[in-house]
Image (tube, rainbow, N blue to C red):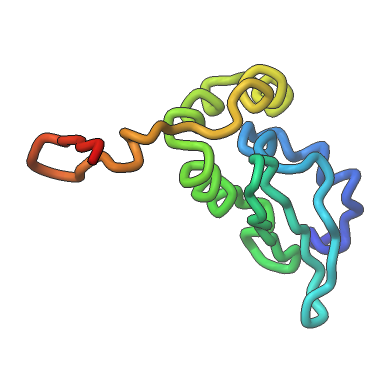
Amino acid sequence: MFVDQVPSEQLQKEWVSPVYAFFGSMPVIKEIDGRRVHEFKCSARGCKVKIRRYLNMKDARSTSNMRKHVKSCWGGDVLSAADNAKDANEVRTKIVGSILRNGSITAIFERKGKGKVTYSHR
């Protein structure tokens, strides 16, 4: 049985990766160009990104695109903390519930490479 023929309830039992906690608990099921798709919406405040997973592909269970988005939206240290959790439920209750977005104004303007960061209030 191919992934695109398996009901979503059965697939949800396999969604144990901590990265699922950063997205809505129930994906939207669509059909795009005759192909079934699960569309996961990021749960960060103000984020409108939706990650699509085409169910007729070999990598239909891959979470790499979800992980890339979580790293850019929530931050690498938040993703690392989620990886250390035992399951998605723990991440959802302990990490996602308490952190809306990682970062500060100094982190946004931090220089990459050589040089010291200086600030001016003018």
